[in-house]
Image (cartoon, rainbow, N blue to C red):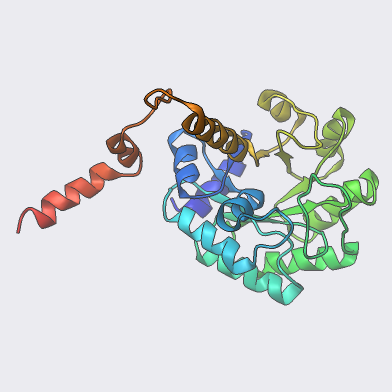
Length: 288
């Protein structure tokens, strides 16, 4: 089964889909090897890892798609990609969906911020009018080639226009064909509880470990009725902390370097498919 069809089947199965955020091929590989059914290509992580820039809408559509394409070539599990605002109007949205789908993503989420956007858990965001947002979601739905390609309608209006407007936008997006709704950055347990009750379709929760949304266990998220949870910064945060700790040790240690849980080069390469490449070497190169 192709990843795009596998993601659709996961939605039909009814279990909570947990998709950790990955930002490059190595983290995508780690998510797959850890046994998760899907991964999320985080825009925050993509901007940080590929450009060294904050998540301020500075990454272009082609840069974001290139990252999704590289990750899709690395893993077999479905990739849900951040597609920001679609990078323009309905025409740009159409091309955005075409490119993500062509390069192997199984789905995207699209938000209603103005462009350039900001990370959804920052203050002073701005959103476009509801009618414009709904029109862009409709264009995204019409642009997909495979009916299995998943369109997630994300609204950032909760922190700008209030909770009632956010729920209204989510429902309006579902009415024009979005598969799931993502009300970004709920700020209380009450809002977390109300979203799946008041949005008349399957809902996604985006969790940032240092974000605005109260942290719940994944079991509690599923019990509230969410169908998917994106763990946007779980690997990015862990990686930055690990980088800092390792480099601090390098700078200050007077002893031979030692890090806990160090992998040898061969162990690292084995995670990345070295056994299959060695088999090819035996078959084609050494057989000459």
